[in-house]
Image 1 (cartoon, rainbow, N blue to C red):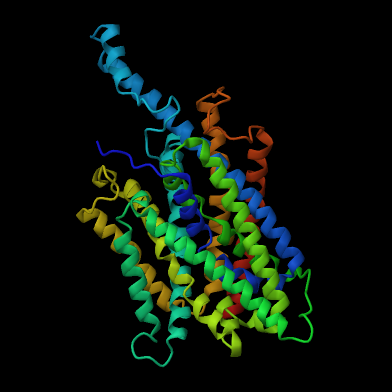
Image 2: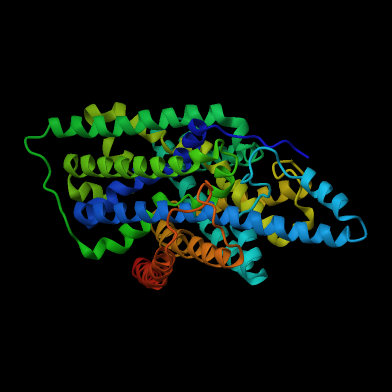
Length: 452
């Protein structure tokens, strides 16, 4: 059996940040300006709190699924060994238990496999379909951002000014790196995270520089309810990394650090988003923010050129985050479509895994080329509809059924959620039931208005 690679808290935090901060600073300033900073602050804060609760539920669901799987395996082996003595069978079963911790996770679960274990095959199909649709949209959106940003930076230079060049380069690298374990590229995650911090700092300094050149600070809009649906979709899209959290959190050691990583990452993300949006609204006119597709475009002027070039490379830093999404899609698709061909080592290059990787990166690259100018529609549909399921409904439903199947009473268990009252579960489910149809209606209306 392949030895489990564990991840220490700081590299795990950097990986979390690289996935969480992949697109928010580039997309949120425009949505915040349109909806008003009041609604933007409320939306981002609520989304952050919900994200923490949902991620907390996912950690508990992982533990519950692992315990149910162990119990099922134990019963199966007891039946097989029924002809042996009790002491013999007990000795064999006990010897297979890990020595690391009585709460250590042994099985690898994704959203789909947990849904199947808790609810049945139909739930696996539904869950995997939602996740795959969302992730395809997320990968396409990030590809569009990379292509638009870097092709503009190199405008006038042969080949590298071409949008398709950066799309091809980006997705080829993502496909290759998707066969690398997160734990084995910790140094890459750390370096990219540091580059991300420096880039965000450039956004803040550039905005302050722009404010210092103006006679007066830009007038701030506080509330515009007409733009609220797009703001909610973009906020969910920015915070949503729960689809990949099972694979990122499972190897973290010590396990007591898992919830600290979750809390610190989301709070750090929240304050970063709030400060970036605030400085953007104060530095640039509303009409300029509303007309821009990406935040870096606002810095392509005069003395702000230095920030423009730095910020434009921000999206290419997703080279450390996109492989995680690609791995998540591949795992879920293969377990659903060809479970008998899934390699024991999920990162091993086999013919089926290579084919499924191509089925991910090639369509995403083609869609990124076709949908070059439709980033808001991509974000609205993926974040506002599928994202709501992944953030609200699925984590709550998993914990709801998991607790029925396995009753946990260990207060020192690091995997058990602090949100034990049923109110938290039903609150997420009800919010999901409200937001999915509302956001779907608003996005369809927007598409009709856009293309009508």
